[in-house]
Image 1 (cartoon, rainbow, N blue to C red):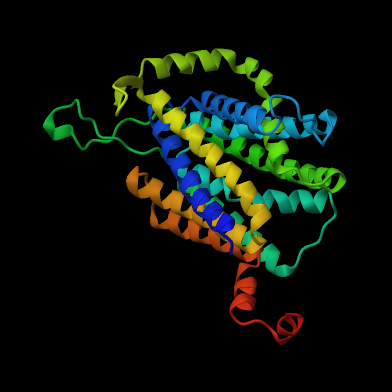
Image 2: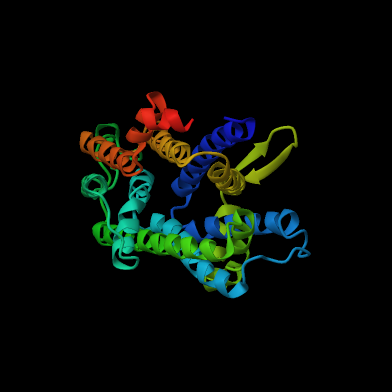
Length: 341
Protein backbone atom coordinates (compact mmCIF):
# COMPACT_ATOMS: atom_id res chain seq x y z
CA UNK A 1 0.00 0.00 0.00
CA UNK A 2 1.46 3.36 -1.02
CA UNK A 3 1.55 6.49 1.13
CA UNK A 4 -1.32 8.17 -0.76
CA UNK A 5 -3.62 5.21 -0.11
CA UNK A 6 -2.66 4.99 3.58
CA UNK A 7 -3.21 8.74 3.97
CA UNK A 8 -6.62 8.47 2.28
CA UNK A 9 -7.69 5.67 4.65
CA UNK A 10 -6.70 7.67 7.75
CA UNK A 11 -8.30 10.90 6.50
CA UNK A 12 -11.49 9.10 5.46
CA UNK A 13 -11.89 7.54 8.91
CA UNK A 14 -11.03 10.75 10.76
CA UNK A 15 -12.96 13.09 8.44
CA UNK A 16 -16.16 11.02 8.23
CA UNK A 17 -16.25 10.24 11.97
CA UNK A 18 -15.66 13.87 12.98
CA UNK A 19 -18.29 14.95 10.46
CA UNK A 20 -20.87 12.78 12.21
CA UNK A 21 -19.82 14.15 15.61
CA UNK A 22 -20.30 17.79 14.54
CA UNK A 23 -23.54 16.86 12.76
CA UNK A 24 -24.94 15.38 15.95
CA UNK A 25 -23.92 18.46 17.96
CA UNK A 26 -25.87 20.65 15.50
CA UNK A 27 -28.91 18.35 15.48
CA UNK A 28 -28.99 18.32 19.29
CA UNK A 29 -29.15 22.13 19.30
CA UNK A 30 -31.44 22.57 16.28
CA UNK A 31 -33.09 19.40 14.87
CA UNK A 32 -34.64 21.31 11.95
CA UNK A 33 -31.36 22.66 10.55
CA UNK A 34 -30.99 19.97 7.85
CA UNK A 35 -31.50 22.36 4.91
CA UNK A 36 -28.97 24.84 6.34
CA UNK A 37 -26.38 22.08 6.85
CA UNK A 38 -26.86 20.77 3.29
CA UNK A 39 -26.65 24.26 1.77
CA UNK A 40 -23.41 25.10 3.59
CA UNK A 41 -21.84 21.78 2.54
CA UNK A 42 -22.79 22.33 -1.12
CA UNK A 43 -21.58 25.94 -1.10
CA UNK A 44 -18.18 25.06 0.41
CA UNK A 45 -17.49 22.18 -2.01
CA UNK A 46 -18.68 24.27 -4.99
CA UNK A 47 -16.34 27.15 -4.04
CA UNK A 48 -13.43 24.74 -3.58
CA UNK A 49 -14.16 23.12 -6.97
CA UNK A 50 -14.45 26.51 -8.70
CA UNK A 51 -10.93 27.40 -7.52
CA UNK A 52 -9.08 24.06 -7.73
CA UNK A 53 -11.05 21.94 -10.26
CA UNK A 54 -12.40 24.40 -12.85
CA UNK A 55 -9.50 26.86 -12.25
CA UNK A 56 -11.91 29.81 -11.94
CA UNK A 57 -14.05 28.54 -14.84
CA UNK A 58 -11.18 28.12 -17.33
CA UNK A 59 -11.33 24.29 -17.49
CA UNK A 60 -14.24 22.94 -19.53
CA UNK A 61 -16.16 19.92 -18.17
CA UNK A 62 -15.62 16.55 -19.88
CA UNK A 63 -19.23 15.48 -19.25
CA UNK A 64 -22.10 17.46 -20.80
CA UNK A 65 -24.36 19.78 -18.81
CA UNK A 66 -27.42 17.74 -19.84
CA UNK A 67 -25.98 14.55 -18.34
CA UNK A 68 -24.88 16.36 -15.20
CA UNK A 69 -28.31 17.89 -14.63
CA UNK A 70 -29.93 14.44 -14.32
CA UNK A 71 -27.25 13.43 -11.82
CA UNK A 72 -27.69 16.75 -10.00
CA UNK A 73 -31.44 16.21 -9.52
CA UNK A 74 -30.76 12.79 -7.98
CA UNK A 75 -27.91 14.03 -5.77
CA UNK A 76 -29.60 17.25 -4.62
CA UNK A 77 -32.87 15.53 -3.69
CA UNK A 78 -31.09 12.68 -1.88
CA UNK A 79 -28.87 15.04 0.13
CA UNK A 80 -31.73 17.36 1.11
CA UNK A 81 -34.08 14.53 2.12
CA UNK A 82 -31.41 12.71 4.16
CA UNK A 83 -30.62 15.77 6.29
CA UNK A 84 -34.27 16.86 6.43
CA UNK A 85 -35.20 13.54 8.08
CA UNK A 86 -33.64 14.73 11.36
CA UNK A 87 -36.56 17.15 11.75
CA UNK A 88 -38.95 14.18 11.99
CA UNK A 89 -37.82 12.56 15.25
CA UNK A 90 -35.17 10.36 13.60
CA UNK A 91 -32.27 9.72 16.04
CA UNK A 92 -28.74 9.85 14.61
CA UNK A 93 -27.91 6.14 15.28
CA UNK A 94 -31.05 5.00 13.39
CA UNK A 95 -30.16 7.41 10.58
CA UNK A 96 -26.70 5.80 10.29
CA UNK A 97 -28.07 2.25 10.35
CA UNK A 98 -30.81 3.05 7.83
CA UNK A 99 -28.35 4.57 5.36
CA UNK A 100 -26.18 1.47 5.68
CA UNK A 101 -29.05 -0.36 3.97
CA UNK A 102 -28.31 1.19 0.57
CA UNK A 103 -27.43 -2.28 -0.76
CA UNK A 104 -31.10 -3.28 -0.46
CA UNK A 105 -32.23 -0.43 -2.70
CA UNK A 106 -29.35 -1.07 -5.13
CA UNK A 107 -30.33 -4.72 -5.45
CA UNK A 108 -34.04 -3.97 -5.92
CA UNK A 109 -33.41 -1.40 -8.66
CA UNK A 110 -30.71 -3.61 -10.20
CA UNK A 111 -33.25 -6.42 -10.56
CA UNK A 112 -36.10 -4.19 -11.78
CA UNK A 113 -34.21 -1.80 -14.09
CA UNK A 114 -31.04 -3.64 -15.17
CA UNK A 115 -32.52 -7.17 -15.03
CA UNK A 116 -29.59 -8.35 -12.94
CA UNK A 117 -29.49 -11.66 -11.11
CA UNK A 118 -27.55 -12.31 -7.92
CA UNK A 119 -26.13 -15.31 -6.09
CA UNK A 120 -27.91 -16.91 -3.15
CA UNK A 121 -25.25 -15.47 -0.80
CA UNK A 122 -26.12 -11.93 -1.90
CA UNK A 123 -29.84 -12.51 -1.38
CA UNK A 124 -29.09 -13.86 2.13
CA UNK A 125 -26.88 -10.86 2.91
CA UNK A 126 -29.61 -8.40 1.83
CA UNK A 127 -32.16 -10.33 3.90
CA UNK A 128 -29.83 -9.94 6.92
CA UNK A 129 -29.50 -6.19 6.29
CA UNK A 130 -33.26 -5.79 5.83
CA UNK A 131 -34.08 -7.70 9.02
CA UNK A 132 -31.44 -5.77 10.96
CA UNK A 133 -32.87 -2.42 9.84
CA UNK A 134 -36.42 -3.55 10.68
CA UNK A 135 -35.32 -4.55 14.21
CA UNK A 136 -33.50 -1.25 14.80
CA UNK A 137 -36.43 0.73 13.35
CA UNK A 138 -39.06 -1.01 15.50
CA UNK A 139 -37.03 -0.45 18.66
CA UNK A 140 -36.51 3.24 17.81
CA UNK A 141 -40.19 4.19 17.70
CA UNK A 142 -40.12 5.66 21.20
CA UNK A 143 -38.33 8.95 21.85
CA UNK A 144 -35.58 9.26 24.40
CA UNK A 145 -37.11 10.01 27.76
CA UNK A 146 -35.77 13.07 29.48
CA UNK A 147 -35.79 13.91 33.15
CA UNK A 148 -37.78 16.83 34.53
CA UNK A 149 -35.06 18.96 36.12
CA UNK A 150 -37.29 21.94 36.88
CA UNK A 151 -39.54 19.90 39.13
CA UNK A 152 -39.21 19.19 42.83
CA UNK A 153 -36.45 16.74 43.92
CA UNK A 154 -38.89 13.85 44.24
CA UNK A 155 -39.89 14.21 40.58
CA UNK A 156 -36.42 14.47 39.02
CA UNK A 157 -36.53 10.99 37.51
CA UNK A 158 -40.05 11.32 36.08
CA UNK A 159 -39.81 10.96 32.28
CA UNK A 160 -40.90 13.88 30.15
CA UNK A 161 -44.19 13.67 28.28
CA UNK A 162 -44.14 12.27 24.75
CA UNK A 163 -45.92 14.52 22.21
CA UNK A 164 -49.12 12.93 20.87
CA UNK A 165 -47.99 13.32 17.26
CA UNK A 166 -44.47 11.94 17.82
CA UNK A 167 -45.17 8.59 16.16
CA UNK A 168 -46.83 10.20 13.10
CA UNK A 169 -43.83 12.44 12.39
CA UNK A 170 -41.44 9.53 13.06
CA UNK A 171 -43.24 7.53 10.34
CA UNK A 172 -42.84 10.49 7.96
CA UNK A 173 -39.10 10.48 8.77
CA UNK A 174 -38.85 6.75 7.98
CA UNK A 175 -40.67 7.32 4.67
CA UNK A 176 -38.21 10.12 3.82
CA UNK A 177 -35.21 7.89 4.59
CA UNK A 178 -36.68 5.07 2.49
CA UNK A 179 -37.25 7.45 -0.42
CA UNK A 180 -33.68 8.76 -0.10
CA UNK A 181 -32.33 5.18 -0.22
CA UNK A 182 -34.19 4.46 -3.46
CA UNK A 183 -33.12 7.78 -4.98
CA UNK A 184 -29.50 7.10 -4.01
CA UNK A 185 -29.67 3.68 -5.66
CA UNK A 186 -31.16 5.23 -8.81
CA UNK A 187 -28.37 7.81 -8.81
CA UNK A 188 -25.78 5.02 -8.53
CA UNK A 189 -27.23 3.22 -11.58
CA UNK A 190 -27.32 6.44 -13.62
CA UNK A 191 -23.78 7.33 -12.52
CA UNK A 192 -22.56 3.87 -13.55
CA UNK A 193 -24.02 4.32 -17.05
CA UNK A 194 -22.68 7.89 -17.25
CA UNK A 195 -19.11 6.82 -16.44
CA UNK A 196 -19.29 4.03 -19.04
CA UNK A 197 -20.00 6.65 -21.72
CA UNK A 198 -17.67 9.43 -20.62
CA UNK A 199 -15.09 7.80 -18.34
CA UNK A 200 -14.52 8.54 -14.64
CA UNK A 201 -13.90 12.15 -13.63
CA UNK A 202 -14.47 12.10 -9.85
CA UNK A 203 -13.23 15.61 -8.96
CA UNK A 204 -15.21 17.16 -11.81
CA UNK A 205 -18.34 15.23 -10.80
CA UNK A 206 -17.88 16.27 -7.16
CA UNK A 207 -17.66 19.93 -8.21
CA UNK A 208 -20.57 20.10 -10.66
CA UNK A 209 -22.96 18.00 -8.56
CA UNK A 210 -22.49 20.56 -5.78
CA UNK A 211 -22.43 23.69 -7.98
CA UNK A 212 -25.53 23.23 -10.15
CA UNK A 213 -27.99 22.50 -7.29
CA UNK A 214 -27.23 25.72 -5.38
CA UNK A 215 -30.09 27.76 -7.03
CA UNK A 216 -32.45 24.96 -5.91
CA UNK A 217 -31.98 26.06 -2.32
CA UNK A 218 -34.13 29.11 -3.10
CA UNK A 219 -37.07 26.75 -2.52
CA UNK A 220 -35.92 26.44 1.09
CA UNK A 221 -35.01 30.12 1.56
CA UNK A 222 -37.48 30.60 4.43
CA UNK A 223 -36.09 27.54 6.24
CA UNK A 224 -32.50 28.71 5.63
CA UNK A 225 -33.26 32.17 7.04
CA UNK A 226 -35.15 30.74 10.02
CA UNK A 227 -32.38 28.37 11.05
CA UNK A 228 -29.63 30.88 10.26
CA UNK A 229 -31.36 33.15 12.80
CA UNK A 230 -31.43 30.29 15.32
CA UNK A 231 -27.70 29.76 14.71
CA UNK A 232 -27.03 33.49 15.15
CA UNK A 233 -28.84 33.47 18.50
CA UNK A 234 -27.16 30.33 19.81
CA UNK A 235 -24.76 30.47 22.75
CA UNK A 236 -21.46 32.12 21.87
CA UNK A 237 -18.07 30.53 22.49
CA UNK A 238 -14.60 32.01 22.42
CA UNK A 239 -12.25 30.96 19.58
CA UNK A 240 -8.81 30.16 21.07
CA UNK A 241 -5.85 32.28 19.92
CA UNK A 242 -8.10 34.70 17.97
CA UNK A 243 -9.90 36.26 20.93
CA UNK A 244 -13.15 36.18 18.92
CA UNK A 245 -16.61 34.96 19.83
CA UNK A 246 -18.77 32.88 17.47
CA UNK A 247 -22.28 31.44 17.90
CA UNK A 248 -21.74 27.79 18.76
CA UNK A 249 -24.01 26.40 15.99
CA UNK A 250 -22.02 28.30 13.34
CA UNK A 251 -18.82 26.93 14.86
CA UNK A 252 -20.07 23.34 14.67
CA UNK A 253 -21.44 23.99 11.17
CA UNK A 254 -18.07 25.26 9.95
CA UNK A 255 -16.34 22.18 11.35
CA UNK A 256 -19.05 19.93 9.84
CA UNK A 257 -18.55 21.45 6.38
CA UNK A 258 -14.75 21.11 6.51
CA UNK A 259 -14.87 17.50 7.72
CA UNK A 260 -17.57 16.67 5.13
CA UNK A 261 -15.21 17.81 2.39
CA UNK A 262 -12.33 15.90 4.00
CA UNK A 263 -14.50 12.78 4.12
CA UNK A 264 -15.99 12.86 0.62
CA UNK A 265 -12.81 13.92 -1.20
CA UNK A 266 -10.77 11.11 0.39
CA UNK A 267 -13.43 8.53 -0.40
CA UNK A 268 -12.89 9.50 -4.06
CA UNK A 269 -9.13 9.01 -3.59
CA UNK A 270 -9.78 5.61 -2.02
CA UNK A 271 -11.73 4.41 -5.06
CA UNK A 272 -8.77 5.21 -7.33
CA UNK A 273 -5.89 4.08 -5.07
CA UNK A 274 -7.30 1.00 -3.29
CA UNK A 275 -9.02 -2.25 -4.09
CA UNK A 276 -12.79 -2.57 -3.68
CA UNK A 277 -12.13 -4.75 -0.61
CA UNK A 278 -10.19 -1.95 1.10
CA UNK A 279 -12.80 0.67 0.20
CA UNK A 280 -15.63 -1.52 1.56
CA UNK A 281 -13.76 -2.26 4.79
CA UNK A 282 -12.84 1.40 5.40
CA UNK A 283 -16.38 2.69 4.75
CA UNK A 284 -17.95 -0.06 6.87
CA UNK A 285 -15.49 0.56 9.72
CA UNK A 286 -16.07 4.31 9.71
CA UNK A 287 -19.85 3.78 9.86
CA UNK A 288 -19.50 1.33 12.73
CA UNK A 289 -17.05 3.51 14.70
CA UNK A 290 -19.29 6.57 14.16
CA UNK A 291 -22.25 4.59 15.46
CA UNK A 292 -20.32 3.46 18.54
CA UNK A 293 -19.17 7.01 19.27
CA UNK A 294 -22.71 8.34 18.88
CA UNK A 295 -24.07 5.77 21.32
CA UNK A 296 -21.34 6.16 23.96
CA UNK A 297 -20.47 9.86 23.80
CA UNK A 298 -23.94 11.29 23.10
CA UNK A 299 -25.65 8.64 25.29
CA UNK A 300 -28.21 7.76 22.62
CA UNK A 301 -30.59 4.98 23.69
CA UNK A 302 -29.39 1.65 22.32
CA UNK A 303 -30.86 -1.64 23.52
CA UNK A 304 -29.70 -5.23 23.07
CA UNK A 305 -32.14 -5.47 20.14
CA UNK A 306 -30.42 -2.49 18.51
CA UNK A 307 -27.07 -4.26 18.85
CA UNK A 308 -28.48 -7.43 17.25
CA UNK A 309 -29.90 -5.39 14.37
CA UNK A 310 -26.65 -3.44 13.94
CA UNK A 311 -24.52 -6.61 13.81
CA UNK A 312 -26.90 -8.06 11.22
CA UNK A 313 -26.67 -4.91 9.06
CA UNK A 314 -22.87 -4.75 9.08
CA UNK A 315 -22.44 -8.52 8.72
CA UNK A 316 -24.80 -8.47 5.74
CA UNK A 317 -22.86 -5.56 4.21
CA UNK A 318 -19.54 -7.41 4.49
CA UNK A 319 -21.14 -10.60 3.15
CA UNK A 320 -22.61 -8.77 0.14
CA UNK A 321 -19.19 -7.35 -0.77
CA UNK A 322 -17.70 -10.87 -0.40
CA UNK A 323 -15.18 -9.51 2.06
CA UNK A 324 -14.67 -12.88 3.76
CA UNK A 325 -13.79 -14.56 0.45
CA UNK A 326 -11.38 -11.79 -0.49
CA UNK A 327 -9.70 -11.83 2.94
CA UNK A 328 -9.33 -15.61 2.74
CA UNK A 329 -7.75 -15.29 -0.70
CA UNK A 330 -5.46 -12.54 0.58
CA UNK A 331 -4.29 -14.58 3.58
CA UNK A 332 -4.05 -17.94 1.79
CA UNK A 333 -3.95 -17.49 -2.01
CA UNK A 334 -5.24 -20.38 -4.10
CA UNK A 335 -2.82 -22.27 -6.39
CA UNK A 336 -4.38 -20.51 -9.43
CA UNK A 337 -3.70 -17.09 -7.94
CA UNK A 338 -0.12 -18.03 -7.06
CA UNK A 339 0.52 -19.23 -10.64
CA UNK A 340 -0.77 -15.93 -12.02
CA UNK A 341 1.67 -14.09 -9.79
